[in-house]
Length: 335
Ligand SMILES: [Zn+2]
Image 1 (cartoon, protein in one colour):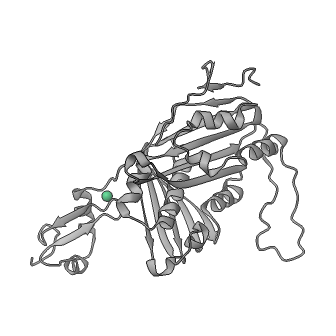
Image 2 (image 1 turned 30 degrees about the horizontal axis):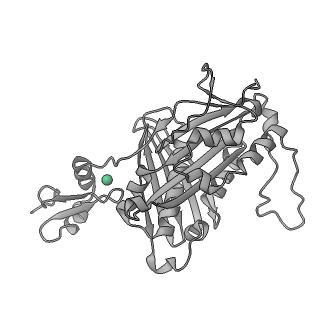
Image 3 (image 1 turned 30 degrees about the vertical axis):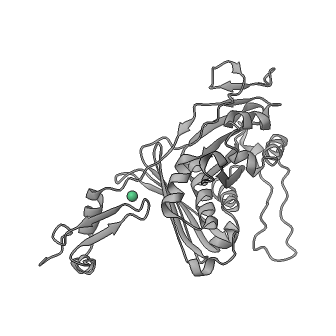
C-alpha cells in the first residue's frame, strides 16, 4: 500500500491529508508506516514533564535522566489497553540509585528519583549517573490480576540502550527507541526555563515472522574470538532504522515542530498513517486516605517511631504533598 501522495493519513480509513502544523504537547501519537511494516509511537512532553521535574528541583542532570525515564515510560506504557499501571523502576549503584515512573492508565504520570548529591560531581551522562543495576518494567492490572515484570540489566549505558537490550532479549521484536530531554528558555517568559522532552519508539512487525530476525548487536560476555552469528536484516527494517537514525534530539523536543510534521519529515517517501493522540498529564494518585491505610499496614512500633512533635507527617515522594496526622489518627497506641 504505497501512498501516491507524500501526505499523512489519519486513522485506518481516513483520507490522505497534509500533516497538521499545530504542535501538541503532553501526548503520545501512534503511527504506522505500512510500506516498511513498522509501527510506532511519538511522545512530546511539555507542561506535564516540567510540572513533575520542577516540583522536586532536581539538579539538571538528574532531571534530564528522570525525564528520559518518563519518556520511555510513555512509549512503553501508553500502548496498554487496560485500567492499571505501568511502572518503570531503576535500582542501581550509581549516584542516582533509584528512580520510578508510574503511568496510571490511561493518562496519569508521576515520577521521582533518589540521588546522592555528594556523588554527582561533574557527571552529566545518564549512563554514568545510573551506573550498574537493573531496570524493571511492571504491568500491574490491579489486585485480582496477574502482574507482569520484565527485567533488564543496566551496565553503565543509557536508558535507550537498556530498552534495546530488553526488546532484543525478551520480546525479540526489532525495536528502536530514541529519547531526548532538554531545557527551554524563552525571553518572553522572563528567562524562566522549562523542561521539554520527546521520544520515539518504532517496531518492525512484518506479517511473516521470519522477516523479523535480528543481527546479534550485542555479543555481550562471549569469550574473545567468538564469532557472533550473523543474520541478514530485512531491507525494510534497515531502511526504517536508518530513517529514524537521522532524528536529532533538537527535533524531538522542538516546541514549534508538530509531531505530525516530524513524522512526515522522516517517512514522507513511504507514507505514514497517524492515529488519535493519547493525552498525558502530571497527576499523583496519593490521598490522605491512602496514606492513612499505609500507616495502618505498619507495625505498632514503626508507627510509634514516626511520631515527632506530637504528630505524624508523611510526605509523598512523588508529588511532595504533605499529610499530617495526630498520633491517634495514625493509629499510635497510648497516644
Ligand atoms: Zn503524591
